[in-house]
Structure formats: C-alpha cells, structure tokens
Length: 140
Length: 249
Image (cartoon, rainbow over all chains, first blue to last red):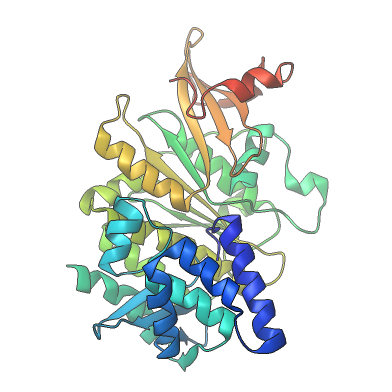
C-alpha cells in the first residue's frame, strides 16, 4: 500500500507472512504483538478473517478494491492502494481523533493478505466504477 | 511526484540525464496563497513530464487556464503541449466520477496526474471523511495508472491547494488530514520582491527524513518565471535542518 504503515507494523506483518508460508499458522507471540499494537481491533480483525469477510474485487482493467462485510452485516469499501475505509470508526478514530492507525476492516485486509484467505470476485469495469462511487451515496 | 517538481525547480531535465527509469517520487501537495504561482509550477511540471517520452499528462482543473503560463527552460514545444490532456470537472461529484472511472478510459496510462485548485473541490464537501475519500481516490487512481503503465512506469501525482494568509483551525485540520495522503509538500511563500517582479520562496519538503530544498521563484512583469537556488542553504545545511518544519511564513 502506498501510504506506509509504521515500520514496526510493516515488520510484524512481513514476519507473519513468512511464518504462514513456513508453518501455515501464525505464532502466538505475533498474535500478542498484534493485540499490543491494535488492542481490541486485533481480535475483531482476526474474527473478520476467520469469517472470510474480506473480498478483493477486481475488473479486467486491473484496478481493484476491497469490500469487507462488517459484523453488523454492513459492507464497507476499502481502497486497495492507500488507507481509506468507509466505516464510521475510520472517520472518527483514525481521521478525526488520530488515536488509531487503522480501523478493524483495514487491519483485516492486511491480515487476510498475510494469511492468503481473501475471497476473490471479478466484475466488469463499469461495475467497479459504481462500487468506487457508491460510497458517496451511502454517506449522503 | 516530488521528483518531477524537483527537476523543474532544479532546471535540469530528465531527458538530458538519459535514464531508463524516471523516478516519480511520492505524491506531492503544492501549497501557497492566491497568486503565488501554483498553477505556473504545475504547468511547468506538466511540460517537464510531457518531455520525458512516457505516457500523457492528465491536468485536472475546474476551469480552463486563462493563459498558458510562460515556462522555464523548455519552450512551449507543440509536441509537449499535445501530450497534456486538460479536463475540467465542474463539481466534486464530476471529479469523483472521473477518478472512479479512470480505468474505463482507453489509451496509454498517464505518467503524471495534476490537480489544480483542490480547495474548490473540498469546499463543496468539507467533512473529514469526504476530504480523505477524495485524497485517497486520487492516490488510488495514480496507483492504478502505475499498474497499467507497467514496471518502472510509475505515475506521479501533484495536487495544488490554496492556503490562506492566516490559516484558521479548520484549515489546519484539513491540511493535517491531507498530509496523511501526501507525504511530500512544497510551500510557496512570498518574499521581498525586486522592482516590477513578484518573488516567491519555494520550499520542497520530501517525505521521510530527506533534506528540504529551497528555491527562489521570480515572476517578472511579462509573466516569465525564473528559478534560482535559494542562496544560503548550499553553504550551511545545519541552519536548514534546525528551522521549523513548517518554515517561516
């Protein structure tokens, strides 16, 4: 992702990816670090990964976007190239107050990349445009 | 696109260096008061990128330029001008639509995306989530252009934002939010002018721990832009380092 995470998070995610490749599981100490950095969001994000709530949607153009099905049943759109999620927690805790690095949906995307448990969906170029734009209507 | 602007300000063209890969650099926010020369610098960056032998340059602005700014060095080569595609989204909604559907547009991927007057688009929808959405979509569009361009064909991004002389707290908040998405910034600040000219101090702050660099941008009465290196810093790097990150107004 273009907007960089703090180095410590980058390192943790890459260590987790290596561990998953080698032993197909995430060591407990990595889970503890995750909990230490992200607090309760870490558990919620892992839960989203377990439920396979993350979908990578791509079109023939090669552009893609993530959708995460939240625990409340609402679907949130997350941009794949930089930090943006349409959920209220992102607007409040990340953007307005600045006391969180990520919301649980963005963290779940990172974790699903590490664990390779992302659902994939192909749509047409036009449908992808609508997915990116629909955000606006939800907010209004 | 900090590196394109650096090339413009440094007066050396990437074409002359004959490198295979032209570095795009991080997304850059160009900041300055009304009339500080933001559009002229954006246009100079467009000409620079158009001369690099890569994809076209996409120039987004709310309304057509009143006149083509006089450029530095590179003359207004018609071949370069042809590679600059101007588009005039009249509202925030149209701008979002253009960015969201960028992958539906045919033709080669742009090598540089420029947006002039971000403040006008933000004024329509001033909430933090709306501003973040627009900034993130700009980055996402550029990431997609880079992907379509192929390896070593990164698409750059420069966005000009007008700042007020006396910034209010709302503006400071919005700027802090935009800086999340634009790690590099270039400030244009007025400087004591000579007779019949307008002099600005351009301060480029790259992302991370890179050194900041300053130039003197002078607009003469006939509109010609001249750029020279800011005189003091070459000799005393420590004074540059110790000054506040925001610089002096």
